[in-house]
Length: 299
Image (cartoon, rainbow, N blue to C red; front, side, top):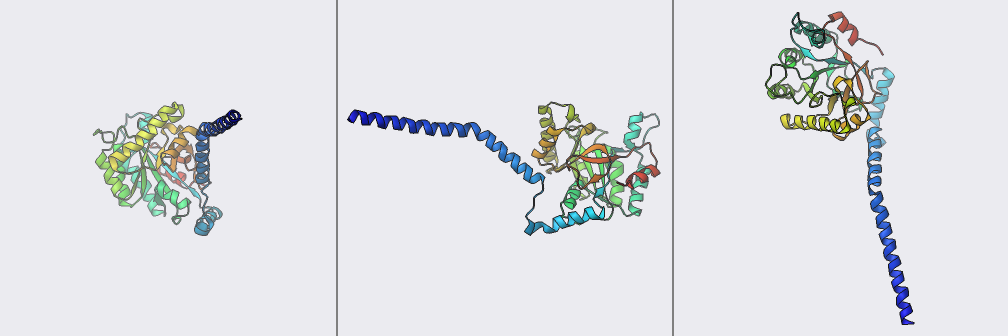
């Protein structure tokens, strides 16, 4: 009888241990999936900009007002270099380079016609309802980090007190070349309060055509470069060659980016994906009237 009781107890203990182990095994096997689901849920919540009504009703009301008034559209201009252009320059160089005199006349037009140049960081805050909507907002962006932006464009932008965005190819920033800005030049513009510094990958690669590990490396590296060089955390990005895909967007989100510019032509809209913003290309071969037509583009 005693032996039978021992057998029953041992059997019961074995059963309990097997049950506990099974529960633990199932949890461990599914822990990653559970964690992934939680991350997806958090991403979904943030992507929808869900606000607590009691605290943020004014933001929702303001956003609705912008839509009703038709002022949610903003031109984001895409510049590259600003510099005198040699007559024998290639067509590509001519298209990407604005003569300083023409650039001055462009900025003078914006000033005289009541445009308010803002940064992408400011645009994000405006669209979220954290800043008031300025009169005729416009965003001036400069891709690559060319030296001419500091030498020729910056004095003009400073003259008009215009805010602007530069997108750095960080591999070339601070290399003390005649082609790209130095670290001190970028710092000077950043410290002026007029300039937002964004990134353009480290090596100017087409992310759409790159393997996933290259995408991660390029975005992580350029982000860390800016943090190290400038003690500044970038939140705006520009896709080299306009190449993007879903993975690129998700990696940008993971590294804290809130706005990203493409080469899709058109006006940026409050309803757009903020990581897929369209822009208006400014071509150095065109005249002032072409520029005027572009900045007054209607939806």
